[in-house]
Length: 249
Image (cartoon, rainbow, N blue to C red):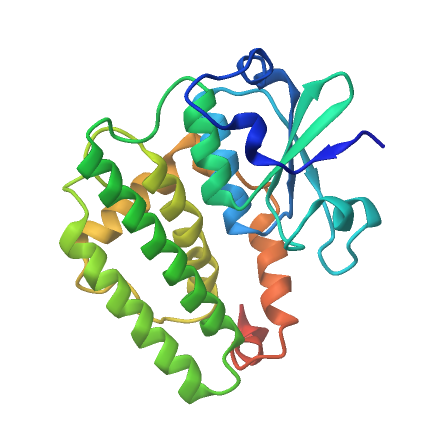
């Protein structure tokens, strides 16, 4: 196995190295077929037109090579080939996307610092909503499910007040904040196959935003064609209250 360099020092400072300048053909994204955070990185790579390989792992049976390079035991990981058999690992989706912003063309962050900071904040908001999604599908009983349903509605009510008239978060230009919300909204396609949870009632901007992201090629292709069935099987096997509602889906 090639030497694994986890040090950030190679990419520090204002000047990029020659190795950093030639990253595009030598990127491997270690992923899982259902992970929404992986999807963020895939969307960013696709929007930027960056060649890469995607390597799926079974997180229920993590291979030894994955354990050896993943400090947190999570995906996504970006394996960056540095030449001469050397390799560096970038982990955490937000960090991977920021790294791509710094090293690859087609910027997906706004140029103005304040707007860029606001986008980063709303990306964190999307991550908080994803935690609530997990709480929703893992809820042990009807009361807990309802509490998480209400919490998600509250999240989307906040988003309704801040998302633009469309088609994307800030208007016409697709950005990294949109790459965060595409995978979030994808869950609700499957939830709506299970029941009428009314997550988006009275939220016209959020509904339009969701539809625009679902139509974006990079968002659509961030998952395999069988993703809806895989997600449904995953939810059915959770042993949660939602799992008991899937028999009619």
